[in-house]
Image: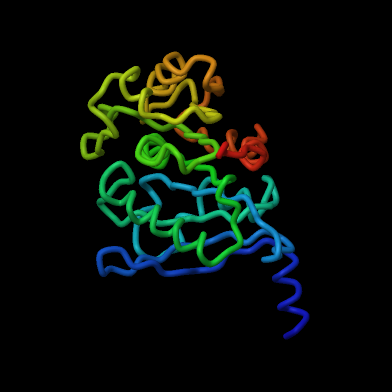
Amino acid sequence: MILLMMAALSSGHFVVRLVQVDGVAHRYQVWIPPNYDASQKWPAILFLHGSGERGDEGEKQTMVGLGPALREGKVDGSAVIVFPQCPADERWAGNAWSIAIAALDQAEREWSIDRRRVSLTGMSMGGAGVWILAAKYPKRWSAIAPVCGYVHRPPSLPDAESPTTESFAGFAQHLPPIPIWIFHGSDDPVVPVTESRRMADVLGANATYTEFPHVGHNAWDPAYRTTGVISWLLKQKRKR
């Protein structure tokens, strides 16, 4: 038993937690980095999953995108990474963003986190969530990395919520002056690549844009596994 506990502490792993929001309990998971030591401060990432991982069982949000990359050792796992789950039929750009923030708040109380090194990433519906949370909490993040996200509701997603009704330029005014790295597949049939291209154009030198040629909606696997974006996020530190 002691050897098993030592092995868990020395390797990265997920733990399950509950957070209460408006009287409702929501399951979320937290990736604990290898050799986690509470005597030091750790960077943190809030990860927002896509629409296919919605639910209340508390597992699916770790099964696509960043979660598998962490389990397989394909990305830098030396951070506390929070994986909230959006309820079925809700969206991060809607009221569910409060669940994500509540999970992050609770994780910051439980784990030894450097609050100047808290970054934000997400994919598809979660990419839209990245944009909206960056605008709502501009002083909270050290960096953001939206993957195949959208600022305006795509025509192919009639039941989705739009993060904003403003123009790209108008919405960009609400974003903090922090490092931003945007990703999208050139052939995305779900979220038009123009959503990321337009934001990148508006942000100019304030953002890096990576477009994957001949890639469809699944831009998260190449983004997380081949670009080093997670290591990049962990290096960013918010100014006081």
